[in-house]
Length: 263
Image 1 (spheres, rainbow, N blue to C red):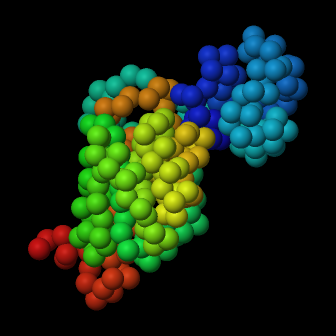
Image 2 (cartoon, rainbow, N blue to C red; image 1 turned 180 degrees about the vertical axis):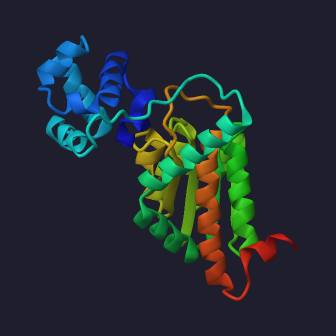
């Protein structure tokens, strides 16, 4: 039920009460009617149904998923406090990557690789101190493996809207929260103009994810979105690394990407 964790920060206050109960008591929740769940969480049946809609399930689908879990299971709920030791930091990092491995859609990843493989140019856009840097790193990596790529960050993103994309262009939007309206608008406009658009975000129902043809969803479960934390972005960087390696093999199978980077 990582999907519940995925959507937790975007849920309304009453919906979070339902999410917390389900994550802490999945076995019990699987046997409750919608009204019984509402009573236990001190919400309403309408709120239960809104919660299900927020995470993309019907109530019957939610109960079916919960019944597949082992008896007495207690699902992980993320902590808000900062890690206080190096081992704890690496454990958190491992968890982020492991959750992404579970939630990522391999077919979408391969579709992204295919689109980039035939692209004449790949534009990567991002806003802010972290997403902007990831966009720059992604463009740099794509250039290293032989793909023409430009990064468009902060105010420069508006210049990208002035370009006329072709069917062979790919535009990537980076936004961990998926809430950046400028990135969402850029993907929408250029997608309508003919480019293949790709979102890299943590939230599948966010505006940025919905604005793209292809959405690469990472697996960070968090209670609140911290715009300046690096660890949630590691999964995004790992996806960029994988895609770059796939493209490197296509450009020149005889050269290993690691040898390229050492030059």
